[in-house]
Image (cartoon, rainbow, N blue to C red; front, top):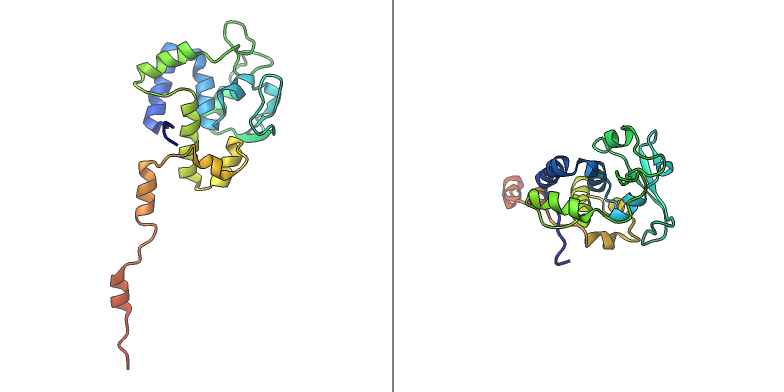
Length: 193
């Protein structure tokens, strides 16, 4: 789909660096978006009761604060990059990523702080770009559209295809995936009797 953007691994790390420098209170939230593919509203509404550290799974369920597009709960894994942020001392007993000023749920996405760090990193896009980035990189790693669709909460895998973007690595992987080399035919050909 035209206009969809994704960031490279290096660009995500640049964003992390600028968030850490300019608005460190947003780093756990941004790391969560990058490593789970959650929508910003899902992350802002995430409660501790939906985080299972033992099973390393986050359950994203419909609530008063957030209604997933499918209306169904889904689970996303907690990877090694996100785990330290979820095992650090809690800033709220209820919300996983609370507003630092109140300790309660963010009333809205912190656009100014996020945009300032994003611009300082030299990037274009918004918080939803982290979702596109997650989808692209997850498809590259797993090669499983069905799995990625489930992780993103899409009803079908064809919806997921809109969020994935060919990365340079896709072409590298495809280059030698098949090799019907005619030289082998000549080399293995046996003379007819």
